[in-house]
Image (spheres, rainbow, N blue to C red):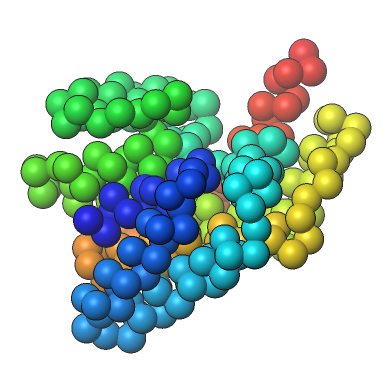
Length: 221
């Protein structure tokens, strides 16, 4: 239930977003057996406060600005981990197979879109594969997403966008980084419930920023 609720919270905003966020907060507080899950719920309370202060149109705009147009980061886990490398293509092939096996509706998004993977994990019965996807795909991708909200990283991406696209879309100053809260909540929840942790050497790449800059350079050719 937890991962499915996170899928709703991190998906493109809908009329049920507030309800699903409250359900997730309540579940985490009910199941909390240590301080970490209470902290996880607190991150979601910050996010819920934002939902209370904004309407659905504003929420859609902020989501788009965060993840899609001149974005801070991306929900596409394969892209944030591998860029357009063949490894992402291989990941999509395997994820598509599992999405079909478990009848997961991916909607208009690719299979490596984080909410789609969370829906898959919720249904998945193969615990070994489930833990592997969390350990090697979801958890490291979320860490990179959270890192992308660092103010210096955001400033660097803005310079890249301005250089290549000549203009910057005006973003909400108050809620520019609001989505770091549900992402931190999910990261902490995975650490507590699934023992998610780093299992590979530190990645020295620039992640999403490097991928975006390379992509924009290709578009100019």
